[in-house]
Length: 113
Length: 115
Image 1 (cartoon, rainbow over the protein chains, first blue to last red):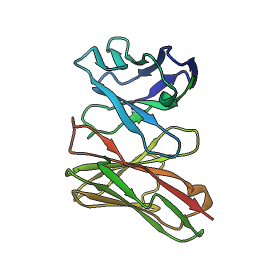
Image 2: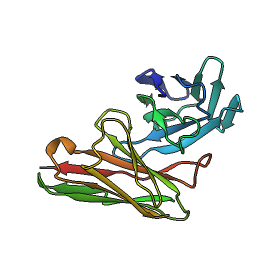
Image 3: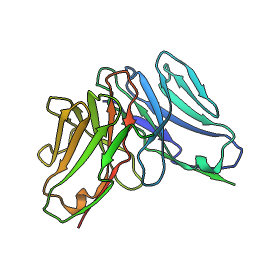
Image 4: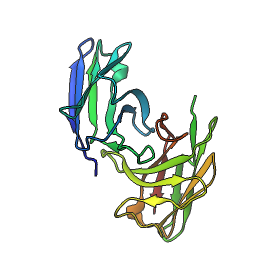
């Protein structure tokens, strides 16, 4: 089955700097890759997603890149702000499994003012 | 606003009792709902996939007789933890989608504490 590895587990940056979180997946048939932000005690919130027919997607300060050949995808946050501090999860959705998501281990991002 | 609602957000129950958690899609019909469990400082682990009108599909290692899932309508799925034990204490999260290829929305989660 699908396996998703996420790095780093913790990331600390200064306000205004960029943050990059990387994930690799094992199932080449996976075709949907969302990123979620989770604040303490709350459910995950979708922040951006990318499908396998696209290499890059951007939404204001957030961007995601996908390399299907290497089976990895990355989240880029520019101009980080203290409110970006949270745990971020990547996920992969295997093809023809009804939307099942396999999550990475999570990255705790801390943005210092 | 939230498109998937979970209830209750927090529940405490006694060991040996059963507790039910509801997951509702608020403004769309969810053909598929998923249930996850998350322990502190860990990732979300998929427990089961629930399709409206059919039996849930459980992930390996998840006891289907302990975690009863019902998806009786296109807007409601329930997870019942039967004969709860302290080790069942966790954060339970549901997600819902209109179907394959559609956005997957998560609920706010339900904290279960078994004492």
